[in-house]
Structures are given as structure tokens and as C-alpha cells.
Image (cartoon, rainbow, N blue to C red; front, side, top):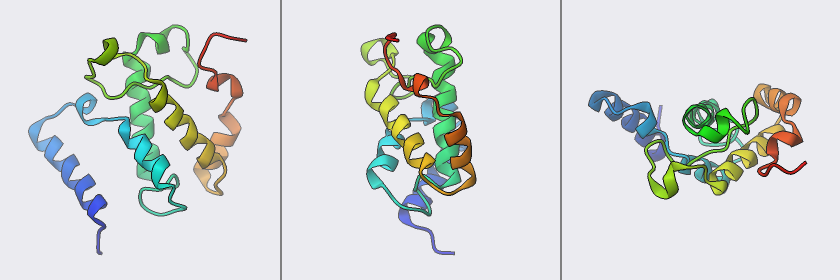
Length: 136
């Protein structure tokens, strides 16, 4: 099977990280969300329908749900706000609005698809989860 250069790099980086014992927190980078949104591929590898994209987005959300205090307090039980990457030191290692909005954009695009993951998104996506501020 012929792999695209992106797929080969993805697999090689994962293997390299495992060999070097790089923590999952250091490996996850929310810039990945921008790449998927910007590519806007209709289907196939690296599209919003790709199960690896779903899994990576979930891993990024899980990381920031645990590490950002705002997700354990103000947004507890809701879609988490997202930072840039796990060990980010910029601006006190906080949430970053562009990455949070990229995650929202992926959910909205996934909700438009006709795939098993989109049914879950359509069923569970609540407008109140998309509010960034404490406004009512």
C-alpha cells in the first residue's frame, strides 16, 4: 500500500516518540486542528472523517480537560477550552481561543457528515458548550 508523505511522517513520528519515551503531553500539539480545518478534505486520510483525526482531537481535548484549571471549574462537564500544546509556557500555559475555535469548527464540520461519528456529534453538540465567556 502506498502511503502519502503525511501518513508516513505521522507513523514515523509516533514510533520515534515511543522509542524516545516522549510523554504524550509533549507529543500532542493543537496546531494539528488548524491543519485539518485548513485542508478541508472531503474524506479519506487527514479529513474530518478520518478516525485518526477523531482520536487525536479527543486526546488533545482530554489533555487540556485535565491540565487547564478552567476546564475543571468553570467549564467542568462541557467541551474543554484548548491550549496550544501540553508543555506550553506562553501566557501562563493557558487556554488559547484560536485552538478552541478550531476544535469547534471540526465538530461543526463533522456534524455535517454522514458517518457514525457525526451522529454522536449532532446528538451531543449543545450551543451552551460553545460559549466562551460566562454570559448567559
